[in-house]
Length: 504
Ligand code: BG6
Image (cartoon, rainbow, N blue to C red; front, top):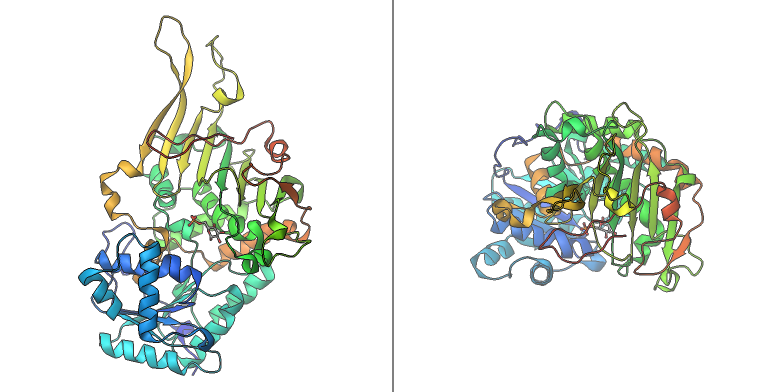
């Protein structure tokens, strides 16, 4: 039976983004790829945290699924979940909360030609919950498996009235993203599709909207008249962590830039939306993506860390980039002439997730002692660190106490770690799974936005420049400095109380 959800759009969010949180309807959550890395690191610990926090509905079941070759029995799946929470969760898998969660777990294998065990597990879970619980399918499987899982959900009728979370990367280029959208839309109406980008679930990324649109202070200067350039920087210290199979096919540009960094850019660059509803918010990011200039390979540095080609599973002559830095523009009135510099890479000197808006210098230099060195001038910036737990700082120049008018760098900081509300904070995946259960698509990517980003990426995907080597622990190939000249890469020190330090 082919599902007919196309004719019946989702009724929409059960909770308005501007309102207080409510708990979702009763749910059956099915995780495809339940024995995989993502489920172990994020999804199972995240669901337990939601359960423990009382954010899951009274009636819920979590059904793990995988091809028969990797299938687990119910008990083995519970043990697998316990290990996952032990290793990656924020609390012990013990006590009454854990026992209740564990009871809600079961497993059903699913292969394209043999979905029987999964159908039986879902039916049993539905009986256990009673009534008509909603189904939410989470496709935590390699992108190559998306189409076949979607096909199975359609042909078995499981998709009916259900919602689906699809992992990134959604396609590998424009043609494949379009084809995947068609496959998905044959079974799920767009209103039931939740393409996940976990950066959009980060508190501090959502907080960019609050910073900009809940205050009169920042928005008036958030434009080309006052901002000289914007840097979105996600250096990572980790390497590819044994993910050669995925990484060789994907590379940093597809893995990090076309997805996470462009989505963050969408929040930084958007016009004020009429509301925070999914449609209004995603209309505004789609407008940014339409104005985003196609990536010019001449303004891109692709790097590969020394030793990458010796990683198990990596081709000896691999041209896959583990680092990318690029310069792009948003061609609209607000941002005309303001370069956006994006950088991300593996095995770099520090881990950061940070947006820096650099302000123009004042027109008149009346401070004879003003520090004119690059580092001091870079004090004129607003820094949004969106790594968990995140912080925001305004870097500026202040008068040093004393008889002379001497200037020194100063900083005002808001730190999430000090915020009393932090106990309500959710990790990116937790927040987004909850939003999907509530039917709120605001922080999920939409088909038109995704396709436009692949279009923007096209020139680089078609004509990549050769990768340049860089030393692990460095800041990438030396040519990244020329890319941003006359500006400089800026990696601000963490505010007091943070860990680590270091500027590029
Ligand atoms: C993932 C990428 O989507 O995001 C990884 O596939 C990357 O390569 C990770 O390391 C970074 O996310 P986080 O959770 O560290 O913010």
